[in-house]
Length: 313
Image (tube, rainbow, N blue to C red; front, side):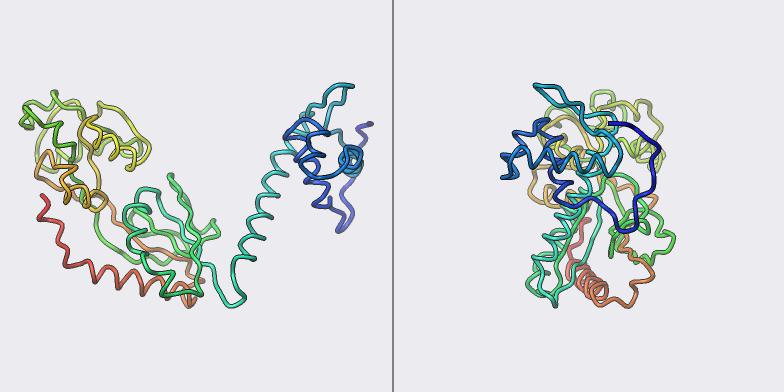
């Protein structure tokens, strides 16, 4: 096929979803025959759809030989983009079909560990109490800018200042050093024998241990040394398995401390530089679903306020 000078697509002249599905399936299998079986079409029909797509794009998407096909560089790029488009269409269609005309979708984003260990317990019973509001919860491990996301409410850690967002403080962060009880057998933890212990590190907070001891006016070496993990969830799991001592927010390990599966290595809770917030776009300040989640979280905080976590230490 000639690779002539490209011309812009005519107005409203886009590939059909059938053509995109045929291309995606053929690209995934690298076989028109297997694509035909999956699509319940004939091989010639698949080949024709792909050929028409190539004609419209004025690009070859496949290299063709008598026994096999393979993606061209343009085909590889287009495949990833088409795959993303089809996933969005599927998600949008499924979401629409799963909700009644009178229901709303509340899109929430949260860091994974906070989501699993605090947000999920906080939202228990929400669906039953609010049957016309369906939750869609997305977990993001790294930093993100909520105003750039298609999000209604975000649960964030930081200073409470995010452009275009209203932030309501939930609580401060206090971190404790925890480990499996067996890890301390025959070891009395103190600052003089810190080298005898493995300090589990969180990649996003490389100076956490240093600050933990600095708050106590303790100066020791080796606070940056130890296995590193991407999330609090994995760090807590490592502590439970006896890998070492983890420095994690108290609220995230309260159940394990209450049950005794984790214990504190040192009786000190270090106040973090930031706090946890519920945040939402300023444009949604009067939204019914945002108002409902604000009231729900506020009631949960009031209900659990009497559960003083200090007694765990």
